[in-house]
Length: 179
Image (cartoon, rainbow, N blue to C red):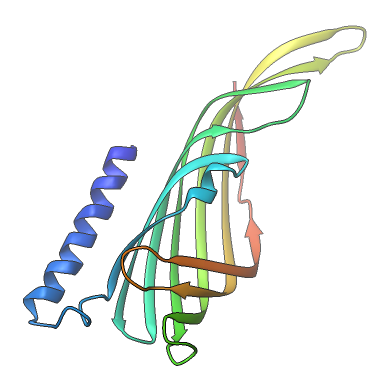
């Protein structure tokens, strides 16, 4: 699944970059497309490898899509062991940039949506009437979120940063427990 995701991001990015150069734009104007990675997704409870691409059709508007392959879960408990974690997360986002904030730093406000699907096996001790029993539960979790965010982005040269903070709502339509 991860190779399909990485291939999709690379193909979309390649198409955006070729479209920009085919329109005979200068090099500074062609900086409308970028690829982003997020190392912080490795320290979340559901560890993931994350990759995003952003396209800016006009200087004040950015359209970003991020995808993540979830491969592990941190769980700090003596009574549970989590294994066989796999899943994905897709995060589309639209941003409005204040390009006149500073020369190399832009602030933005945006609307972000997210869909996450994770499957994992949870090995846990179940307390019965007069004994304990070790059981393995296969869990499937789904959730959707929507958030308003604000942030700062540095876009100078090849390496930059993108910090944001937001507030939103999470909806868990259902979780299934298949044994």
